[in-house]
Length: 218
Image (cartoon, rainbow, N blue to C red; front, side, top):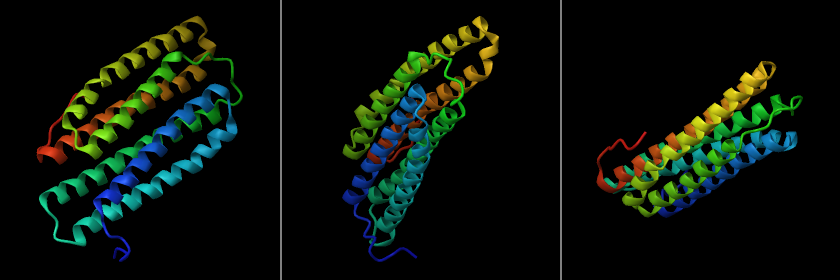
């Protein structure tokens, strides 16, 4: 049973969702910065912060359910609650990706010989910028902005291909570095998936506004 203190207020839910987005954005950028700098303490701290994201996700889900249970919901209420629960899950998965990067960073503590491609940073910056704007589009019910953001995932895909090529050249030049390069491949893979999950958030904006499910650029 939900606590009576959970009132399911849409504006409060929006505030929590915005806070969760900020946590995810910061943990993604910090995980990559820690990988660059070899900051083991930050990488370990990211593992703790990822648990904060999980707690915030569950709080949002409970409040979204309270919105439905606590009053006679309108069609908008139902779409909003369903979308919020879905988006909170997407943000939690993004936190998992950041945690994965932090784990890779911890595993690389004895190997600082690899130059990290600049494309990895560009991917992270692009993905987090898309995330911030996608959440804004959802919170303001701006379906046109959501459509435009989803189209930008092509840029993230291009960064991924460029990173892949740069890492492949490292292996060709020095096959003994294959283990370190493989770790960076996994970082790039995590960052590439961020763009796809942002697209899913954009799809929820269209659903909230129109009531129709639409598959956007993926």
